[in-house]
Image (cartoon, rainbow, N blue to C red):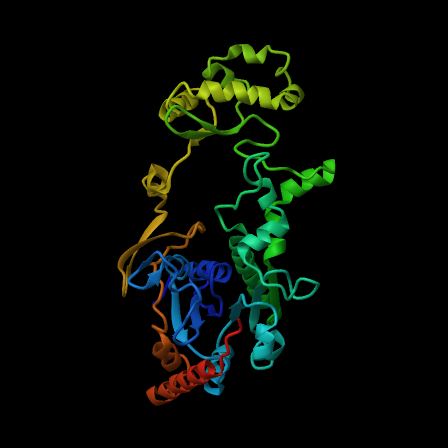
Length: 405
C-alpha cells in the first residue's frame, strides 16, 4: 500500500480512537504518510462496531480510517510494549488522543520516547489540556461544545440550545493536531530534533468561534441563539413554497427579486443601522415573500440578479451536485469485508502533486504480521508469541474485573 503524497517518507504510529484523533491521522494518511493504527487485541477502536454497520464494520471506523494499516498490540504486556517501542525507533510520529495521564502511566510519553528516538514527534489530543483544574475530566464533543459556548448560540431564540449536528470539537482537534504535526516535521528539518505537540478540544473549539468571541469582547454581550439567521444582517435560512434556501448578503437587490422594492425607501430599513434595529420586522416581510415560490425558482432568480444564495440540500442531493461530481469529492474503495464502499475525500489539493489511489479502512489487526515482519523483521513464531501473551492478559483482566453497582 503506497498512497502518493508529500508525506510519503513519514511513518505515523496512530494510537488514536473514536473521532478527533482518527480524523487527524486520516488527513496525514491522505497526504501520503504511512499510518499504522495500533489497536487493542479483540476490541480495537472503541467505535469499531458502532451502527449502522456493514458486515460488522461500523460507519465511524469506515469514515475515519482509510489509508491506514491496522495492527493489534497490547501495550500492557511486555512483548506488546516492546514491539511498540521498536516501531517508535523507526517512526516519525506517535499520535494519541487518550485521556490525560494514560500515556504517562504506560511510559510512552514524549520524554520516554525521545530517549530511544531523539527525532520522534508526539502529538496528544486531550479534552482540556495537560494541566489545570479540568485536565483529568472526561471529555466528548458535546461536553466540550457546551463548555466552549458553541452550543449556546445554536437553536432558535427563546427555545433553548440545540445540539450541533457537526462534531466541531472533535473535528477541530483532529485537524489542529495534524497541522501541529506537520509544523513539527518542518521544524525538525531545521533542527534534527523531535518535539511534543499538545492540542486540546476546548481551545480548538474556541478558536473556531473567534468571531463570536470578538463580538462579545467588543460589546460585552454574549451572542445568543441565532436560529436560522445571521445575527447582524437579514440573511440566513428561509423557507420556500417547497423547501428551504440560504440567502447571503444581498441588499438592496433582494428587494427587487422579492417584488418588495418599497423596502428600500421605508425609513425602518433605509440604512444598515435601521435594518439592524428593525431586523425582526424586515425578516417577517422576507419570510412571507419567500413562501410565494419554489426553491428552484428563487435560485434561478438569484442567478439572474447576482444574489448569493443556494438550496438547503439533503445528503443524497449533495452527492449528485455537479460541483461535487466535478471535484471528485466522493471516492470509491474496495473494502476486504464490506466490498465496494464510498467515502468523502480529503479537501486538500496541492498543485503539481498527483493523487494516488485510496486504501479502504483496515479490518482489526489486518496488517499485524505485515508490519511486524516487514518493518521489524519479527518471525511468525515471535508474532504468535506476542498475540498469545495479549490473549493471556485479556483472560486475566476479565477474571479480575469487579462490577460496581
